[in-house]
Image (cartoon, rainbow, N blue to C red; front, side):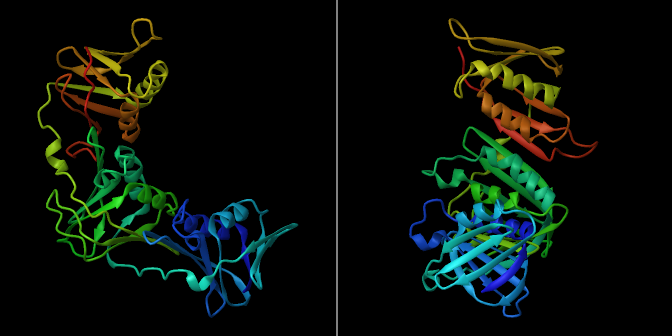
Length: 383
C-alpha cells in the first residue's frame, strides 16, 4: 500500500472511525483500524469494529499501490491530528506502516489482518433526518441517560419513530428528557422503536456533517413502538456522506414515557434561560452534586439559595414571569442545569405543581405548536 492524501480529510476520517474503537479491547486486535485502498486506487477505506459498534469512512487518495493494513487506531488518530497541513504519505514496509508529512515521520507496527473480524452489513434503510436536528436532539436528551451499566435500559436513548415524527428519549428514573423532531420515513405508516446506547449515539452525532442528511437504518429486530415496547435483538445504523456506523440495540424494555408527564399544573414560570443558568452555576458553587439548590417563586421573582447553617451559603434573585401561589422547590444543581441547557429558545417555561411532585421544563413554541423539548425532573425533599 502506497498513497498520498490530504491531511485534513484524512484526519476527519480517522477520528470518525476511531470513535468506534474500545478503550479496553477484549482482544488486542480490536484496537486496530483497518486501512484498505479500493481496487481502482481512488479511495482509502477505514473501518473499526468491537463486535458492538462499527464505524467506517472513506477518503479520496492518490494511490501508487493498493493493499490493506491493520494499525493501532487511537495512536493513528493522535498522530494524524498532529501532522502539519498538506499532503500525508502512507505506505507499508513489511510489518510496518510509514506515515509522513513535511519533516514528520512515524512508523507504526501492523497488527495481524487475518485475525480482524468482518464488519456487519448495514440493516435496511428506513428513512433520513437532517443532521443538524438529530445532533441537537441527542445533545439535549442524552445527559438524562444513566451511566450505571447495571440497568442497561437506563443507559440508552430511545428512538420512537411513528410516521414522520421521531422522538428521542432518555431517563435515569429521576428525570426524563424528550425531544421531538421531524424526519422523512420511507414508509409513512412506520411505527417502530430502537433503544440505542446513549454514549454511542452521542459519539456518532459529534462527527456528522452539518447542513446534510443522515440516513437511518434499522434491522427487523425492532418491534412496534406502542409507546412503551422495545426492540429485541437488532441493529441500528447511520450513514452521513462517506461515513457510516452501526451499533447493536439494547435488548430491554423501555418505560412508557408519555404517561410520566403530568397534564395539570398549579403554577407556571417564564424565565430567560441564560441568566437563570448562570445564576444556577454561581449558587451551586457552595453545593455538591447531591446538595439541594432551592428555588423560591413569588410574583415577579425567583430566589435561588444553596447551603445552610455553618456551611457556605449563596443567594441570588432573578426577575421571572410567574403565575400561581408562592412555591418553594429544591433540585440537584446538575439536573437543573441539564434541563436548562436543553432549552433552545431564549426563554424557558417551568411548569410546577407541588414541592414533591415533578416539574417540567420546556422551550417556548411558536403560536399553536407544542414544545419540541420537554424535561421532567423530580424535586428533592427538603425539611
